[in-house]
Length: 258
Image (cartoon, rainbow, N blue to C red; front, side, top):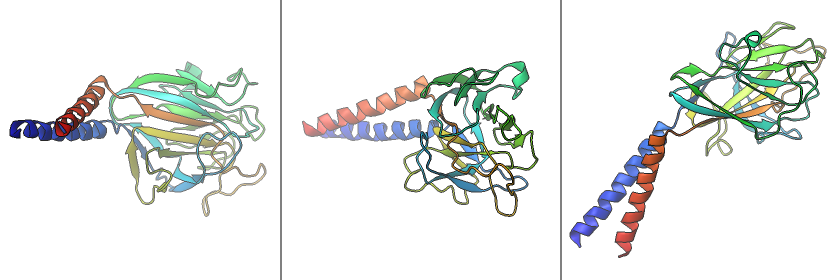
């Protein structure tokens, strides 16, 4: 009985250990605050029909999204709000649309770049090296209604049209985890890490007090004009560790019951 109990305790300890190790190993995405100059701080995903992200969740304005660990990452198109502009989310290794791209999500069709709307939940998976600034950007206002098209790079600023860090548009980025609805504010943290990151576009001028003012064209601050989930795909070794942990816990419980 003593040996059985010891084995059960050992298996339980091993299970907890490998599951913690596997969990920590998975935190392969990081979102860092855009520090400028000027610093852009945080804002909130607001309500809009067709939204892809819950409301009142805060995130970093134009925050940089990095693949911390080498491996596979999946992009999923979550949807778009009631944007009147033609917008696209592009995955492109060299950030140069003229050289082609790897994948594209479009909120609607009607432009040379976006022939048709991308179905919601469309995915694309690719591989990144460790510490890679994920090569995505938004191409928005493709129909030129507000001086576009504009390109907004990951961790950068919009190009084309009027100048300024958010005078043509902005996006919001944050880690999606178990706390993001109950404690969604990044606060004073310059970087957050996790396995899932959401990004959402605001395709018009975004006001930041003391930094950006908006003239003709109005403002759009809901960040729901094209939303994407970026997910780190667990490595086979990590899945094996999780499996070992679950088996260990199961055996420990069976021995305890016996």
